[in-house]
Amino acid sequence: SIEEAIRQGFLSNYEYHLNFVMLSQEEDDKYKKLTKALVSLMNEKKKNKNWEKENDLTRIRNERSLVVKKAESKIISLKHLLSIDSSKFQNAVIYCGQGKSNEDSESLIDAVTLAISEIGNLKTAQFTSKSIDRKKTLEEFENGFYDNLVAIKCFDEGIDVPKLEKIHILSSETSIRQTIQRRGRVLRKCKERGKTLGYIYDWIVLPFGTTESATGSKGLVVNELKRAKEYARLAINREQIDIEIEKYEQEYSITEV
Image 1 (cartoon, helix red, strand yellow):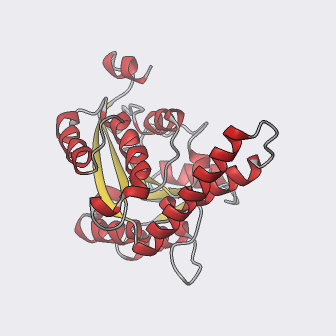
Image 2: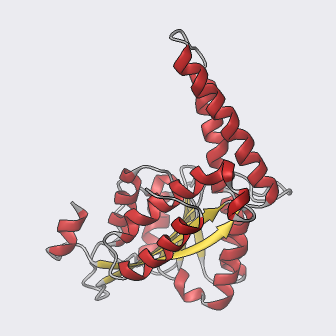
């Protein structure tokens, strides 16, 4: 397990840091609408043994997930962090979700890449399934030609870059498997650089408005904090993160994550 590998010194320790952002009112309304449709379909499924709308269920789940993955506030928060301390994006991988970030139909990964290169003044490259020569891109990153890589899911498996020090999670699935894979990418030890510590920065998305108006979006908070708890569990700054998580659990009246 990762816990055992860290304890025995095969993997490095890590710090985990949270960036809380909020859905816009429009995004929140869409999330709630899709949640209602999802609940309705699931109720139909329970009542009907010959239910044949599994594709609809999957489609709505994916649409709702995209609302969170492409939340516009993530780009705003990212730009703010870049303007304060761009060093957090050096020797880093930034995980993005597929989708659109604004009305101009600019893809989220393009918006992130542009922000990093312009505001952070860093050399960045995209690492996706559509990248022409991923092996070369990875080698150039390892050799310091690029400061960071902006990636979609394909960076999760089969990639070994010991020098990698930081990951930024702008998009995530709910699976524990993915948290294990991503930690595994950044916790590899690197003797050449004297690396003993990794850094994980995670964007946690909250519903729009007050906690009272978040009735139809409470599940979003539960899912986001569940991921945060898993990453925080083995972090050396766990106590600090637990306090932050507990604060939001209390605000949204969440008793179990």
